[in-house]
Image 1: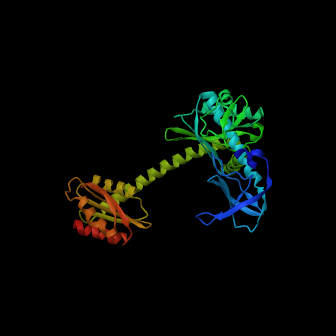
Image 2: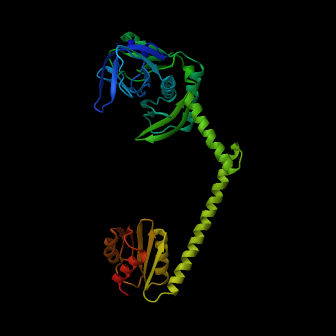
Image 3: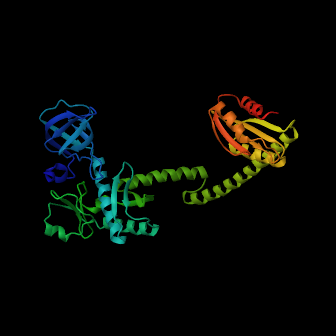
Length: 397
């Protein structure tokens, strides 16, 4: 029976002795053994499996398959008869904290706002629940977090009850409908939460330590809430403190002044970006004037290195605006690709789309635009000057 499994009899059991029933390999060739009982919790109900050792061989995974619990091992063990299992207790207790914290947080959302949880994920670093609502405000998150931590501070017992009768079930306000009809296991925080659950939990809410909501995001009409509990709160605090210390040193500002220093830096950076754009605009105007002054015919052509297609577009527009009788052909070599722009003045009737269609196959490229202005790009299969020459050949001097 489920309730006879060691991890249900005593969630704090760290090592145990059990008998090997049989051994085997799965379709991936992973060796496993099945024991007559186990303290290793198998993956299920949103809670990851336990790890540890069996006769000093690492247990990498634990799964329940066809009613038996398979302990997947790093290597097959030669042991027969009885073996000694030792849990990775730090991992187990972390999972107990996170799972119990999820019960408390979920119940707090229901208690305060009637927001139901529809799914739960216990990740390596962060835990999440999905709420069946469109939006959750910052004030609501703050209120829920406070209630959850109040329940933790009250150190209420966390109880389990197996196979309650129908009359007993009627006395509990279950958060969600039970998915099983036999071997029912209720996890109860008296006066606060009643829930069918097969996971492992500490014996009291106080052992959850603390709950901290980290962030939220919208997921297909629902809200996903990311949070951590217990020891993970300290890990998050340490990580954020280290990041804040680094930022403080880089900004030469005290830690409580980092936000102000960043705001000043952003303002200065915005001003620099604006000045840089103005300088680029002036440079393009200078280049445009130089190209127009030095032209020898109706075609103005130029090849560049490491120029963005946006810069080519701006320069081409300047050229044909200043002189509506010209055609501007501009090419840039950028890393592993060639990019180009072809533009005509208002007094010119040559189709730039035809120019693009003619030269794009040379570089296995793609482009877009209209008869007056096109841009495109492709493989850097030839030098920019050579490609420019092909464009000039098509247009004709």
